[in-house]
Length: 309
Ligand code: GDP
Image (cartoon, rainbow, N blue to C red):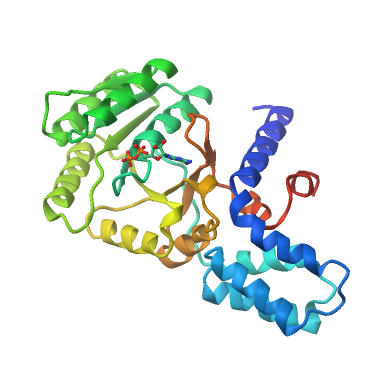
């Protein structure tokens, strides 16, 4: 990619991230705007800000750190925005490096969190990037999910493996991944049915799907879709899935509809799982690769400030 194109892509990611975080930012931004021109923040100001940070699901520890830094005279010369950014980066400093995703991406998660939509969006994303992509509809419980993914695969002109007659998702996954490998596709995206950890059979089934795919290739990553509206439960959901399957990372969906987008930070901190993508709408191109830098900007800056800064 040439430098100019790279720059355009980056600006588009920043813009979409900022726009996807509108609801999360609105309260924080509103309070910070009220501080403008003040040389001193009183207890009431700090309390309001702390409440907004907690409300956005940034978590107790990080919110406290930020508030303490605002009280500290040592950091007076540093802008509020930079302090925010520094504290978040410091808070996440122990995270593992985010690896590139491999050929096969298995999507897992609780019902309704946006797996099927994300499968199609991911297909669109990689195909737009010049990759050859196969989709595999291994949600054998929900005919509508197969139909939905079929429509998208036609729209996006992607290879699809589906079998409405099969009741065995592991066999559909096997067929889809082996056919994607046989035609040397760059990317194979497998949609699975929604499940909750309390259903042991479904969780065992997921283990089997993973095992079957792993026999075909070592290049497998597992992404869990998490609805950003879920709040703290998001952490629990991922922890339960981790008992059955090695998760590589997270797609945080429905960021456009929540004021609690700070949950991304808690997921990264508490689970040490990287967020790979954010869903910011229902359309196929409403999926943004997660960039921590743009995300932090999106929490506090307006679009103009973020792009120019
Ligand atoms: P699944 O059961 O996990 O496969 O969930 P679906 O992919 O069927 O999505 C459930 C609903 O959430 C659908 O109405 C999607 O259009 C919607 N949805 C998925 N991702 C997003 C997103 O990022 N933003 C918004 N606003 N809606 C989304």
